[in-house]
Image 1 (cartoon, rainbow, N blue to C red):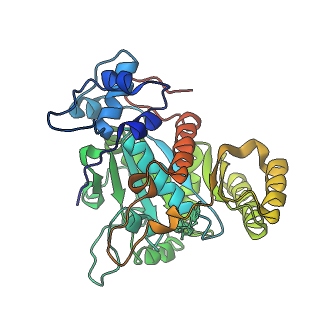
Image 2: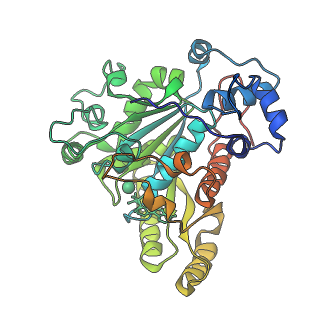
Length: 356
Ligand SMILES: Nc1ncnc2c1ncn2[C@@H]1O[C@H](COP(=O)(O)OP(=O)(O)O)[C@@H](O)[C@H]1O
Ligand SMILES: [Mg+2]
């Protein structure tokens, strides 16, 4: 069920983040349009090639990329105390965008509701669904320094070429959440998991996304602590009253984690479901800028019906908006957020400098 991903020239140009003509982009990619094809179709590998060529470098082979990996991938943990704000929609769409850009992305679904897994096309609803979820690794009796031999078995390949992988979840992850309570130093378990598997993760990925459950679950807390490596979590708010209070709760939760564990985890806030004509939205925006101004991402995601079309349980054609409607205003806003996170989380690839 691994997908091959292709997109047209205008989407490739938007994803490249470079102000260049279609002709120049094709030159940078360094591949001729196949005979018999009317228009050039670009792939994640093409976008990666363009980035290396723009830096005056040769494109590493997949093997060379794995050998070169020494830096730990950037870690983007999404957290929000309230559900339904669009955390999963943004996490999956930003992850898919970075994969389309040719970064090597791993998504860890850390929510028993499995919406990220479903959105990426992994079915979890059947009674005999058989996946290995992240709870298996977080609750191991001895969380020692040996890498997990079964890690690669847990990983599903979503895009061809290793550009988008997933550790899926299903409802049984809720059992792990419950047993985390009895586990020693459960807050450190996600950090331990990432560290003991650093070899594998460095070889295969440039960035790891974690979609956590709403609220303050033990697994969510463990990944929040692990986010000290990035210095912040990514959070999503809707500009309305209860969501602003949820944001205050998340801020005090982070402050508590920092005090108890000595981690220094801040947050980057993305505003979602923005609709300029609503009065309560305008009022909430004022509050957000005055209280959280320095943490706000510059891009705002509009209210856009395409997000609701993504999950289509009837015919199983679930896919992120950026794949299905890459030229929409919703996708354009996601592309902007992805580009800014590449800078603010310092995402790069072996041999390339981190962009600023
Ligand atoms: N910008 C948006 N515009 C319109 N609907 C959205 C937007 N973002 C998310 N949604 C919808 O909101 C609902 C909740 O989104 P979801 O990503 O599952 O939230 P969470 O993970 O925070 O619970 C979904 O039906 C989704 O399609
Ligand atoms: Mg969710």
